[in-house]
Length: 328
Image (tube, rainbow, N blue to C red; front, side):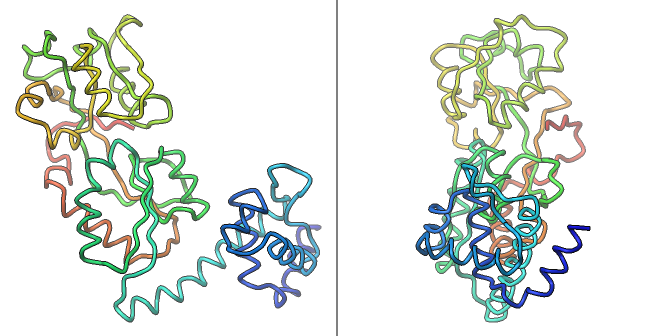
């Protein structure tokens, strides 16, 4: 009954609510700090606090529990903030409609990309976009999957490029391409005698892995979990977030690492001699563009998607008829 009374009160006093106030409570919820939220909204902290207090008085409820650090929303505050995000998002679509009608592509596009994709895909894509759309300001961050998901949810990122599926009902997945994993082996390895390798083959040597928090680490471990058995010493963990570092560790200290196929695009002939594809079924990951379910900046995001597809070899767009092993 209390919930119904609150909603009734909100309806009767909604005329006192402004979009600016909604943006302020969204900012506080995102940063969990009044000072940080005020800085992001380009207002003073007293101004932001006063406007939020006015909104709370208008609604007759407390949106935030100020006794907690970091500040957190109250139970009813969570519902109000969720609805505020929808309201602000819908209001911003008006500007987008006007811009599209004018044929303009400008503003900011904030993108998060996982580190095992970014260096091999973005240089050509971003260079082309900056040349074609000079009024569109691109902001790109290399983040882990977890951080990209979190920042898209709260609106800090417009979209992300990562490995899917991610099983997030509030986010939308736009599949881009399928990428095969390959093994990179040291020059002295017995695997040089093989044309293709299996999971059992690579577990007979040192296996260099990415550190915790990188989805590709889990994907590599999933590939290796298909082996029958392996001695614990066969796996060597080196804490890095860089595929390039793993390659250098193999070159210097022997062993093997597993790399995404895009990463070998600039390899020399000598380096390609150290690459081995997997026997069928090949391990493959799906790479997708991620957005909120009801997302803004449709035109800019569609352009970004088209540019990615434009620089990819055709074989990446579909795994084809060959047998593949999807890795999640």
